[in-house]
Image (cartoon, rainbow, N blue to C red; front, side, top):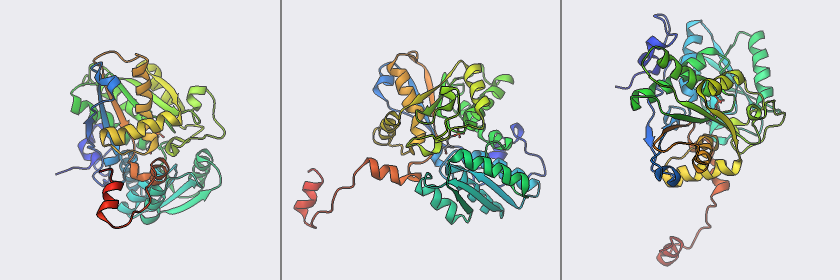
Length: 350
Ligand SMILES: *Cc1c(COP(=O)(O)O)cnc(C)c1O
């Protein structure tokens, strides 16, 4: 039977005998070998996708949330709060429901994908929309949790990063070694920090002989780490990484520098090309932010920056159903046809 993430990796996590484990049986997501793209196949580069959309609420945030909400429960919290571009809110709402706690989520009004809002609402979170961006929401929720008896469950809560490092453990378990490269989108930068922590712990205790080079990709309109300064008004179709002042900035640059990796920007056009390729070419439906890793790796492949025969893992961070709005904008639904065989066959292209 499937076991809670915190039980599977108990000895590598801050889980004590008195920690009540709040779980929805998260993690253990598929590591799917990709067929392409051709630029990889031709050169014997093996790409694997860690499909985090298979988590209970449809994103990797569940790995951190099971840890953060379990610790909040251990410390007797009655309520948790988070600022969110959407997936943290959905996950906090679900795990708080599971724990019988109240969840408060602060969202940037108008920039959260529909699926994530629906999840937060139906799980019963108290939703506060602010007319500002994610960075405003995070600042406010930090102040709120300092002033009121509510536990902050953003990735500035160190337990979130602890839970999220398990993704690296699963990849190492499955491959039996570290990949040569691990690529992922970077928003608030907690996840790249967590991935690097996970690989580094296995490397330091001798479980792994190498660590991957970490490749982080920001959206061009929201690329503070690439530019070296905060972005006041971040813009991108990839709402999950629409962040101008990442909380884990330092963790991200450390992961980049210690691993010999890179943090670069990809355009919305490149992100959407990767989004369509994953869905149509590989059968993996992801939300736009999740495609940023492949968008970047694709460019590295074209520029010959990844050596022949290398193993590359991509974290596909969230499910495509999270953001039906982008899908509908990207692919036009055809008009209805009369209910006759002829009309249907013609419309079906037969
Ligand atoms: C949160 C999130 C990200 C960004 O992760 P960070 O830890 O903030 O860098 C990327 N993609 C999706 C789908 C997310 O939910």
